[in-house]
Length: 477
Image (cartoon, rainbow, N blue to C red; front, top):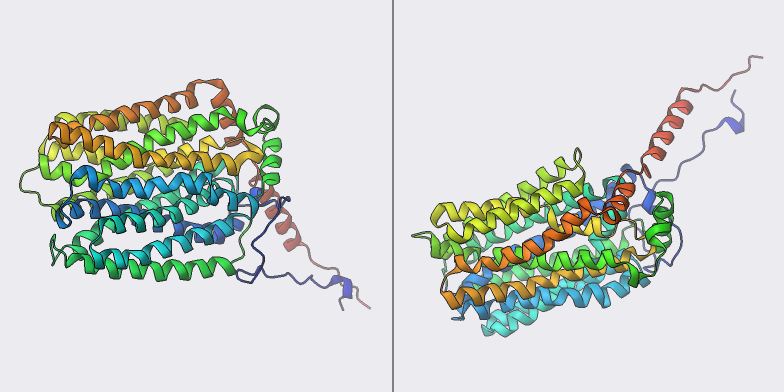
């Protein structure tokens, strides 16, 4: 007969949903040291957010070209959509979104972002009714504000929740889902918006219903996040991780304004995102001008294929990072981006389009890797630093109009591609520093080589195996 002390303790089940406060406070939660298994549910939820802004981004590129024809506007003016979308990002990542992130936590900023995106999607309805390009830009600005909040929280959350060794892998896999969204957006635009109605005013009615569905979905997702129990990573958690990985004394303890490597990463993000958005924005214009018998609907299908190459690049790049240091993959991929984008300037027809396909393939890992490498080792400054790096997305509002202006001046979209090449080259200098400058490279490698969240998991598993093999002694009377 077993004594009461031999009874197995009752294990509490982890609840996935319950009402709880949005305010976390600056306390150690140990969420930055969670094992892979413990992070599955929260990272799954956050990965859904990546699909949302990938879908919105892909849809925006398709609408850009069709608005030129439907609303009779120039290429330069139609780039106002990108200016509104990406212009909202720094306001969120450096302003209200980052304030909510630092004072409340990740879950709060996710809910704020979803609510703002839902409001912007609803405003697409009256903009379509009035056929107002200014209305579309205003609604797009609010959607961009919401997505800016989501990116401000989601990118650092993916990087810091779980073993730091796999930070780049986690964020690249999540961004792979975002890439799938960028494929779905152009496909929807080509086969739903403009398949039967063409470039007519009737096509705007379909836009209304799609954005209404988006609004309902994101509002529902906001409710899910409100009741979901997800681990919160605080500034103290990140300071502790910096100490464990032996970088706190050299970087994380400095004041934020002395974290000059963060600002260099933000500059690289500005240049890279601006060039990436310029290519995606003017891709349809490029193929319709350089490839014979290509209308905007067919161009949208080609864009979907290019975004498919981008998604494949994300998945393959993530797999490569399990074997090769992320900083090396980043440098090689960005070098290939510059080479193929430069080739698209002089090539025409299918060859020119393939050059842009290859450009998008190698673009794949750059954005998330800049975020992950940029916040490595900065400890308690992680949330603020991530806000600055995500704020670099405002480059997407600056470079496309400049590219369009060059294209309009020379009446050649192919020649306009010289602008993205220049900005890619500026971002490339950061990749070079990450690989060859010790102040960059050594900190990144220390964090990447740490076993936080991995060794503990192995030890816990060994303890469970020992307990499972132990048999309670039974005294015979």
